[in-house]
Structure formats: C-alpha cells, structure tokens
Image (cartoon, rainbow, N blue to C red; front, top):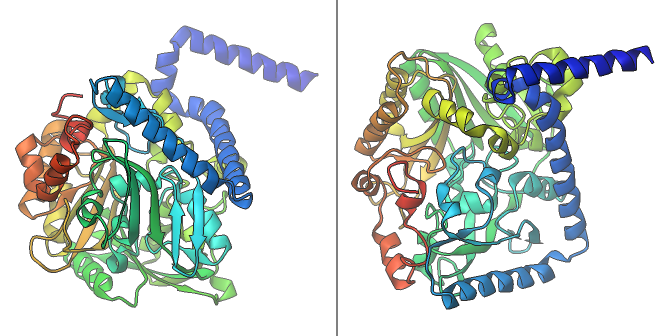
Length: 516
C-alpha cells in the first residue's frame, strides 16, 4: 500500500498546487504537465479509435454505401438552408479546433454549419491507379492502407492529421513535389455539393473551370464530398542521403541543383542557421544494406530534425535506408520542431523510451485546450508560416526571413508549379521550380511584431511573385491579397455558381484584416 499512498499524496499535492496557482497559470507556464498527463493519453485513444474504425469500414466495404447517403444528407441541409431564406453564409460544421491550422475562424459562430461526417477511404482502383477518398480522410489513414497493399501517393504531406479536404481546398507539399507538383496536381477529380444543392463532378475534361478553381478556394465554391487522387507503386525503403552544406550561396546552389535532378525522388533541406544546412536526397528501393537501416519512426528514436542536425557535427555525407512510411511521417512525432516548445525535454532519451509511444499530442486537442491567453501569446510571439517563392529568389528569401524573424530551423521543400489556370501559377506561361520556406517557432529578433513583421515578409513574397500558404495568419489587405493570387477564374466561378450569397469570399474567410 505504501507506493499507492505515496502516489495518492503526490496527486493531492499536485491538485492543491493547481488550486493555489490557478489552472490558467499551469496551462500557460507549465503546459508540458497538462500535455503529458492528459493530452498524450487522449491523443492515443483518438488515434486507436479512428484507425480501427477506418480499417473495419474499409474491410466491410460499407463506406461506398454510406457515402451516397452522406452526400444526400449534405444536399438536404443545403436545400433546407435555401428554403429558410439563405440568410447567412454556409460553412462546414466541423469545429475549428479539429483542423491542423492554428487559426480558429470566428465565422463558424455566425454561418450556417453544414454537418459533413465523411472520413473514409472509398475505393482503391489499381487499374486506373487512383484512390477515391472522402474529405476528412487523413494522411495517416491513407498511408497505412496504401502502403500495406504496395501503393502510395506521389505527394504525401508530412503530418498524419492533414486531411484530403484541407489539402485540396488549401494546399499540400512533400519532398517529391519537385517532380509531381503540389497536392492539387495529383488530384484527377473532385465531387462537390454546390450552393443550389446539386452534386457535380469535375475533372480536366469535365467542368474544367471548376476543377482548376477549387484548389486554394478554402471551401468557398462548394462542399467537397470526394476526391480521386493518383497513386503510384510503392517500394519498401527510402535510400536517403544526408549532405551538410556551409555558406548561404552554397546551400542555395546545392539545393537548386538537387531539386532540378529528377533522378532524386525526394529532396528536402533543413537549415539550422544562415550558413548551415543539411540537404537530403532520396530514392525508393526494395533493397537495403542491413548496417545502414534506420527505422526513424520508432517511438524511442531521436526526433528527425535533431537526427539530421547531428550530421552538421560530423560534417560528412551519410546514407541511410528508412522504411517508406517512416520517411513519409518523419516530422510527425515532433510536429516538425514545434513540440520542443511544448515539451522542452521531449527528445530526452528517457522520455522517448517511457512516453515516446504517446507522442505527438493531437494538434486539435492542443488548440482546444490552449485558451485565449495562450492563443494571443502564440500569435504575438510565435511564427508558423510557409512562403512559396521561385527558386531563383531563394537566397534573397532566406536572407529576408533571417532579418525579419530569425527562426531556425527553416524547412526547405522544392516543388514544380504548373502553369495551368487557378489562383496559383507562375508569372510566365511555363512551369517553374519554386521552394517552400517553412518557419515554425519563436522569433529571435528584438524588433519582431507579429503583424508588421509578417506584412514585411508578405510584401517581399508578392514582389517576387510568390505565394503564402493560407493555413497560417495572413495580414494582407484585400488588394494585396488579390495581387498575390490570381482571382480571375475564382471570381468568374463565384458569379456563375451563385456563391456570393452562399459562401464567404476566400479573403474574408482566412485573412486577419477581414471581419470574421
């Protein structure tokens, strides 16, 4: 009984401490306690439930039958909204805290919420090489299923919880994007319920304008109910080559040359200071050298970005063989490097060994429990931004990031931007190689001000004909936003489909300067 009494005493003392200090104080200043004791176990329960549910539904082949009923239910809700007078805009009824984006839009409280409970993989067609999925199916589900039957997505964005709907209506990128483009470029069909309640399928040949206008529209043209996505054969391993590079000019030259080399199936860079980076290139293979295998996804392994950083100390090129699914979700356990700010000792070997199997906490649960105080602190003292700039402006862009926010590591991911119509395309008529520069963390410049500093970055990105990912805080005014993005096709479709009274404009939905 002594150990139980001791444990009970500790729990009582902990509760008294929370009572004295206040729950807000503990959540703000000692957030790791709340995360470790409550959010990590809850996250495990969430993951197990959704994984088992998806597996059972797919094995029983019940998802397609339920899908048709779910679509009809969405159509019914839209038609009821019209009968009631269409007094407010519509939006999905999914709570804002469930999304991976750190932004929680206030529009959910004033718009008509249309409930969309669609999170299943509907069909894998290996003859056509496509997978048909519902909008709330996430990347963890997709890789678990596809890899088990020998297939994968050409572009499979990093985090497990990213959904197909978010990647279609927003965007998605991966280290294979220098070959295949953004997530939208591997999609072959979308199915949407429009403002009049009708169901429409669009492809490059059918309802073409709508097909090109959907990406980056953030759900302001209709409700996505299914997407067909290309799949390719998968292999067992990724042969990954780590190469430390020193000097900003050398980093940019090396990264650009490796990104242009189509023999590299994967290209990624992690930049740890203005003059230090590790450039990684990889190819899929079915053969691996046993002494070079590294199963980086195992719960007790070091966080990937820390593992990569170790190669700067050895300063030599190294090759490893990583299981394919481990590679795809290499940044999931540490949420890139964001988790080090929440659990400072999270990469400690003892913590990884004892508690690593529960990591990471669900981003949705972190949002749900952060409270207004933490949200404001994060907004003012934390940066989460992805800026997409032409490869030829990479060096100037990194220098600007260094001067304006000074956040490291920086994530560097190349992608080929297609010249086809839509909100995002190169300035000219030809495809162009771009780079996604991702900054996630606490700025180290004394003059940092969230609005002013982000607006400086946004101005630079507009000047080089780049783009800002819309999951993050956007501070542009309306004319600046439509200077960055091509709204010609988008606004044309908004008029043709009578969207103006049904859905907010994308700017009003996501920008800080708009009224929510």
